[in-house]
Length: 189
Image (cartoon, helix red, strand yellow):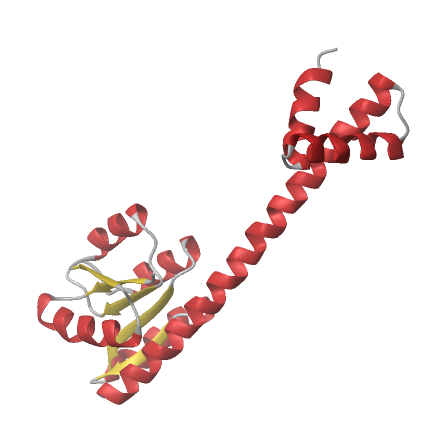
């Protein structure tokens, strides 16, 4: 389930928490400063961070940029109307969403729903990427094992391929596991 981090003074946290839960965020955490937020970001993953600027130790745009550069979370900054445009100019190239305070409940709710949907989309992309990376790693290991079988056992590429596939089926393990075993045995023959 998705988690959110609210970086704000205590008076706003309960207002944001209720709305985040309503949108679909399972866990809501809070930080009162940029330093505390960076510490929490290092401890766990969040889908969304809301920064109610200014913070007690910094304005908040450095924290927003830090978050998007080092995580996959979405960031929403709330800034006073008189400085909102300047904040947008600093963070818009990083994909940070900026809203002018005071915000309406409806406007904030719609923005949070959009950011939640964005998080789900990003998560599916990250998962697909991880699956592809694992597949590429498996192909590399299998190719390396085939090369060892060709060079050390005199097999053809087709024979090495069939050998690995048959061993994986016979032992009911993945081709990657067979390849790792071949590499560990044949590498030092």
